[in-house]
Amino acid sequence: MFEKTKLKKKIATAKQTIAMLEQKRSRSQAALLDAFLKNSSPNDEDVDFFNKYTEQIELERNHLKNLLKQFEEAKKQKA
Image 1 (cartoon, rainbow, N blue to C red):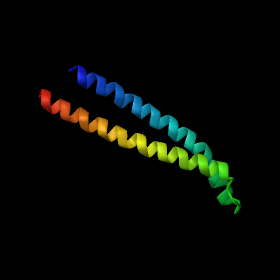
Image 2 (cartoon, one colour):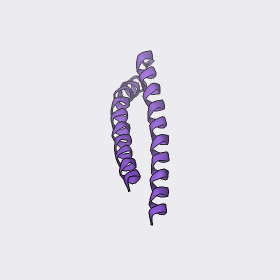
Image 3 (spheres, helix red, strand yellow):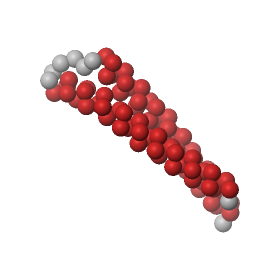
Image 4 (cartoon, helix red, strand yellow):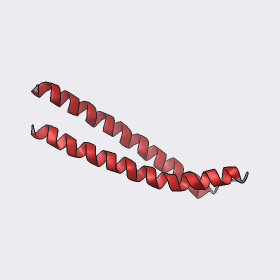
């Protein structure tokens, strides 16, 4: 029972982290889109931020998938 509660908290934290990272990434994404629409070269810093946050989001999503899998397994064991 305690394990499931711990996993629920970790899942909630992972979801919050993903939302925060997506919000940060959207700022650089807007700058990249603006450069694209103006047919200009995007700022290297914006590209770096976009790539950095995209990588972090993917890592956190994989972590979330693992947590959800562990949670489902814990539910099956107790059922």
